Length: 66
Image (cartoon, rainbow, N blue to C red):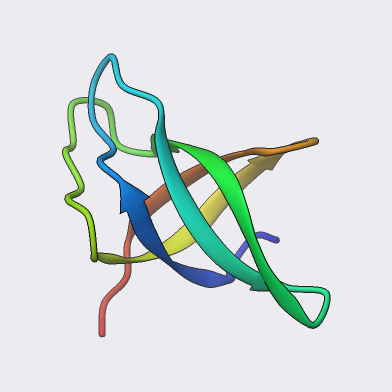
């Protein structure tokens, strides 16, 4: 999971549990998402990279440099 890119489908920010779609296992799956950098806000549609994975469905993400 770490290093995979995905797209934000639910706004991520301080005090919020966002949502991202990440291509994995031949499909696309939704994960709960938190910002890897405290106090960062990531709007819907932003491309992200997974920095940390906490099974089963939680990831910590940062904006991808595209």
